[in-house]
Length: 154
Image (tube, rainbow, N blue to C red; front, side):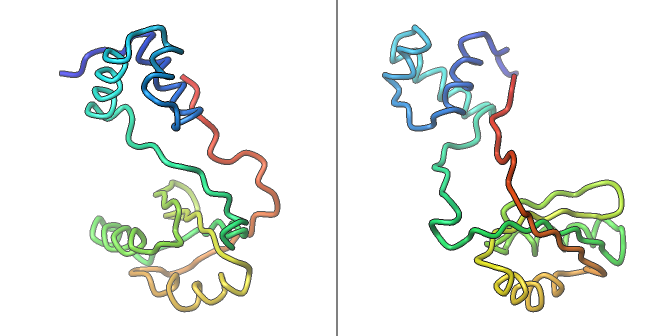
């Protein structure tokens, strides 16, 4: 049984979400608890699944991945097996940042980072339409990223 979260746990999560580079000592000071208590609480938050990781945010344009593309995917069948096959194959593609099963006109939405339109055209023709069960794709090139990867409010 998971321990309920208190205001200190919530503050730890908010601070780490804003800055995952905080040291345990800095985090403990900002939360007004001892370093040992902070470490124990943070470890529990990871163990219980409230925190799933800490990573640096890389500027896509600095690593030649400045083009953001959203792709709507329609599968030819709506069966648990076809969904599982598609998901397993999509998860193996390193250029797919996010893959979401959705309700509506599409079965999935993929968030993809590429170098440019020519790069996307290459992977679309060689890898995306070859994914299991793909009947149709619809591509949306992002013109401007207004809000991306915002921290969760809680």
